[in-house]
Amino acid sequence: MATDPNTLNQRMGNISDKVTDYAQNAAGKVSEISDRVQWSAKQVGRKMRNVDETTIPDAFRRVPKYISPRVHSWLDFAVTTYFLGLGAWCAMRGRGRAATAAFINGAMVAGVSLLTDYDGDGKKPISFKMHGTLDAVQAATAELGPVLHGFAGKPEAKYFWGQAANEILVIATTDWDAGMPPSQRRSAP
Image (cartoon, rainbow, N blue to C red):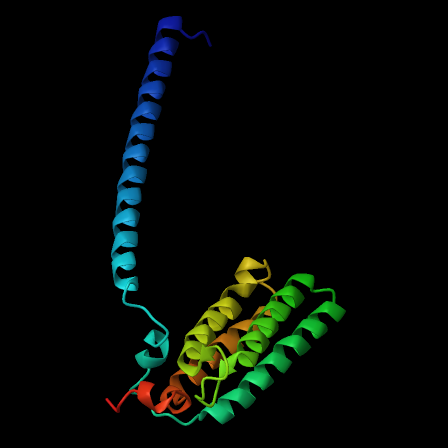
């Protein structure tokens, strides 16, 4: 079947025009999305100026408080032990990525706990409410660990996601004001 060179050139020209139009439309959409993302980032930035150490703990101020600072310190010890044990268990089974994520989480909890002023006496550098905010960071680290370390589709991911959910429950039900110096305690809502 012979094809006329003029017809072939015309078809190639049409395809080229369609590709050019598609590329221009795609570039326009990317630019539009980029503008939206930049606008949203600016809005978040404006709102983040009001964030401080009390933001996360005070977000749950209307939730009943069952966990005292002393109990919270024991829970921190338990979570540290959990993650270090999980890391060892994963390492022994050749799950290096999960082991790394578990050791990171265990070290985060241990480090913050060692520096937290659970008693509100000012002898340690991290206030109890800042500890609550850092607990939220650790919960996010546990939640994102399987994704960031590449084992989200593996069975060991559930141990991280379960602990992240547990951490949010602990944050919500801890009496953060009880571990603060009296002058910094929030009055009941």
